[in-house]
Amino acid sequence: MRDNTLKSDDFFNVQKYPQITFKSRSLRRNSRTVQLLGDLTLNGVTRSVTLDLDGPSPPQTISGKTISGFSATGLIRRSDFSFGASKFNAVVGDDVKLTIDVEIDKQ
Image 1 (cartoon, helix red, strand yellow):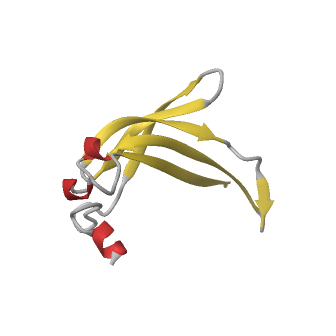
Image 2 (cartoon, one colour):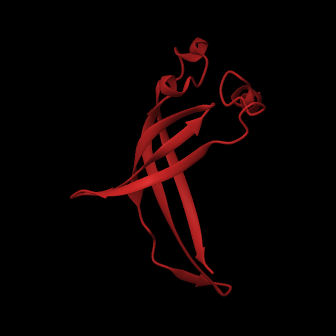
Image 3 (cartoon, helix red, strand yellow):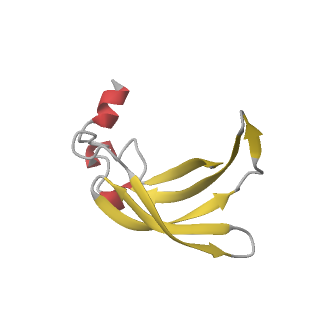
């Protein structure tokens, strides 16, 4: 039941918006972290977001492929993306932690 609720038009509306996309625009370094700036599209709404990067991990060779990875995390507001029906505000917060995990391989 939970999955069906999340897939419904009350939340992800997967029938109308089958994908969530992030398009990076730039990297910014400060004294503590590297930040990735880009555009997140969720529920048909695009907003600029800033994510903190962790990684990349040291390259490893597995089954002949050289791979590495990183994570990007940040906070978004549901209300900024018209995401999650207001009837859930009493039980679901407006701030949502977003995590994007990426694995890359050298070809």
